[in-house]
Length: 596
Image 1 (cartoon, rainbow, N blue to C red):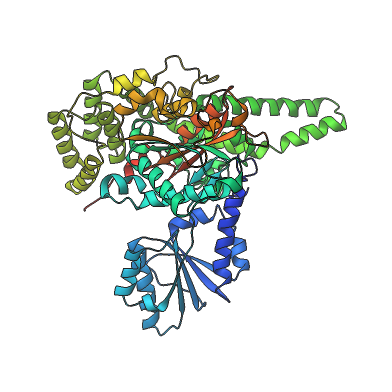
Image 2 (tube, rainbow, N blue to C red):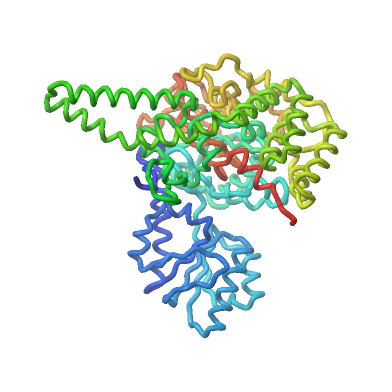
């Protein structure tokens, strides 16, 4: 099955965005005549696999290599580097050029920065005396459609850069990506932002519109009616909880990368010793589209049902005389057999993790922390994890959840846990703890926590959640409704007005703006919950809300948004934009810095 997802059912024409990116890359390659060696920053490799087939690159006389410290072995005289603006990658490029020079190799070098060139990177090339040998350009890849309703800005470290390093450059990239969307789909009339970074992105977006305007009169009714921007820091509880949807669990245990998981072939029933295979996970797989957002308990039942019904059909086939049309129906059903087998294998593998007492114990502890009831029990649990030397990421993830729901830890407890962590895991992790403190994720308690007020006001804990027939987004965590998505629920229905008081209790400022060209038009002043004429784009489709997460979003949150979008009386389709798809582990890992 193709790795590149089909975008045919996307609520806006995302295919045109992807085609544009593909065209821009091919133009770069066409302009460099003859055979060339394309050296790709490994991190970009996955992104490019969602835009362009390798075979198409080869048609343009391209040999592919991944960028690392080793010299490039190729017959080609033209070397094209495609890299993100990262200083360590510049060092590799410089060492390649010096190595070629020492061997007397005559080569032409091209460096294309993604998505734009950076002074700091070029400075390194100058210092190493190789800049004058390079042709330098840009490949403006600002956004990447991961699926028909998910766009990624591919900014892995945006959260840490903003929260710890004070580097806000990613905010410009996010605004640029949104502005690029506006050139395709019209100026977005309503913008609602919550959080320091989000409010800044909204400001930068307005500045970009002033400097390089999208002409709203020419484009008619904009296809995206509202933009909601949220900082990850507004809700750090959700990513630290274990996701319980099918796609969420796949990411927790197997890591979904660019819409695929990589695992041992034996898990998928292919007996090839030690061979890894990639399993694509996107909406082109009809069965995955049906089960990805369900609670995992329900997925197991659905797969069992499908397998049983297939077995019954097979028995009927072999024991009774069937007409030709019945045979045809059966063969049609057989076509879905590979998909059913694939997901039964994956679900069976996931069950080996979800049935472990350690996982179930952890879920209980997360629930206790979210309910913010038994401080001592939680504290002792984390203390015990440290003494057992459980993986550091597991400990920090729970500690962040504990700290955030309690507005920090009392000084005595904070100092004690900090000391125990350093004794257990080594003093080289001082930098890690420092990063987490700087970001405010683990801190000393300075005031009483307002988590209980927030939890009650937004009904974040829902008792008796029916995961099989859910009527609320809380099914994605079996009883906890993600705070971020509750905010989106309110923002879509009636703007920030209805949750003004709660927003003040959460980190960062909030803003709500009407953008020029629409301020006088009464139809955009309200966003009613029920469908009204103005919520339809001219050709009868539902209006669209773009929800952007700065610092990453989890699959469980995306599932909750899809659930909202499918509710009766919901006037909007929702589409997600994010700096990166994350889970508690991958987010915590960005803060880990090993000084050893």
